[in-house]
Amino acid sequence: MSPNHRVEEILSLWKEGRIPLEEAVNEIAGLRLEAVAALANLDMGRSARCGIPEVILAEGKSPSQLAEIAKKAASGGGRVIVSRVSHEQLDILRTMCADHGWALSFHEDAAMAVISRGPPPTAGQGVVAIITAGTSDIRVAEEARVIASEMGCRVRTAYDVGAAGIHRLFPALRECLGAHVYVVAAGREGTLPAVVAGLVDRPVIGVPVSTGYGYMGGGRAALASMLQSCSVIAVVNIDAGFVAGAFAAQIANMVGMR
Image 1 (spheres, rainbow, N blue to C red):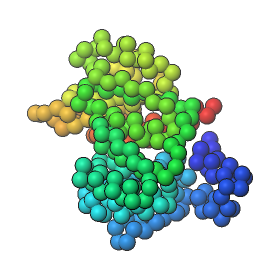
Image 2: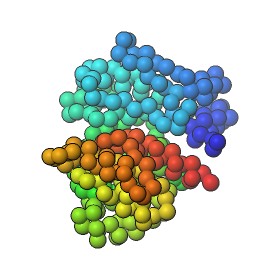
Image 3: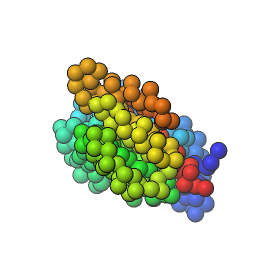
Image 4: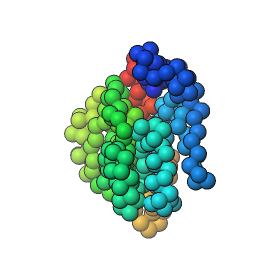
């Protein structure tokens, strides 16, 4: 198995004398759990253990609950990703960060906030390409882009290049050459991932998006189409931009280390 970037970073910090041995051991153990009252148990060791950062899903949480969880996570880990953030939740997160002197960047299209007490991740050699069939798919694609970037990948994007105007795809693919893996988001009939997989020699991850209406709308037709693809693709759940971006980053980082 290839070494985990986070483990390498922890060992380097210990070797340089920037963190004590005990802290390095705790980090590498990857079993750090931080309880937030009776609300949540934060998996602070996920990044060291799996290479995927802990992400807080904002859906279903009140603004005050979300702020309490995010504060605990930021205090322990230094960098926190919050997904599916409403504007009401964003306001309280901004207030919390201002009170503590923390930075907050909000990615509007992805509805994701990144809270940071330190520098951003160092870009590695892994390259992820993210393509959408239409502009309505961008919200899901942007979720994938943010998480892949947070996992240290370089990301190239090409949006609104779907099968309804297939001539748009070929210039977009030229812009994405050199990517180690492709994430392709599509709603409606979900054709584009199979088309892309028939044109490139790299892994393709299909993301069905809950656009479309009528019979099998809401992403169901897109999901069924991708699962029935005769091209070789992997498929995640409807609107699962985070899963697609994290999976793509794992592949790209592994290949980029060679």
